[in-house]
Image (tube, rainbow over all chains, first blue to last red):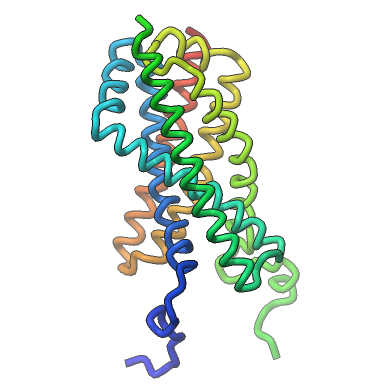
Length: 133
Length: 125
């Protein structure tokens, strides 16, 4: 058994919601990576011709497709907002505990509002374009 | 007495051999993605997504094609670096880690090439 000292693991710290925000950044990042694969697949479907594009759009507008798109939208928006928070930290600003908690709340509210807005506009765009022959 | 060579100290690349470049490129691509993704999301919301000819005509325009290719390259690069760190941190077996890192690299390059190729085809049609 290795006798060298171990650094304390997560369990020794009192829980704060900023921990959830931190791991969410990675989870939403990985989800957005899957979203990027879907984006590349969608572009290939568009380049392959009308029938393959129609098939792709049928998958994307199915209930499961819509649920996935909503998930990708939230993941991307959260990662976008929290990524800006990380880059502000990189400049050495906003690292005080109170400031980091406040910016955390700001990111949650902004991400939820922007996600709702994008889903709203996205649904409107799809609803309108479905009528176009 | 330090065992590090004077050259190693000056180069400042650490034991991994690439210094802060991973961290730095992650930031450079993040900054580039802010305007690129904003542009793409705002543009695509105004388009008739179910209208094949309209979508082809839009992406096929020279500047739209250029920025869509830039978006695909930057997204793929940023995602590649990020997924690499996640695999390195949470997959502990050496074999599994290596296989997943290889898979992630292949998948990111394949997706980027597919996206670029698709946009080039659309720009020529």
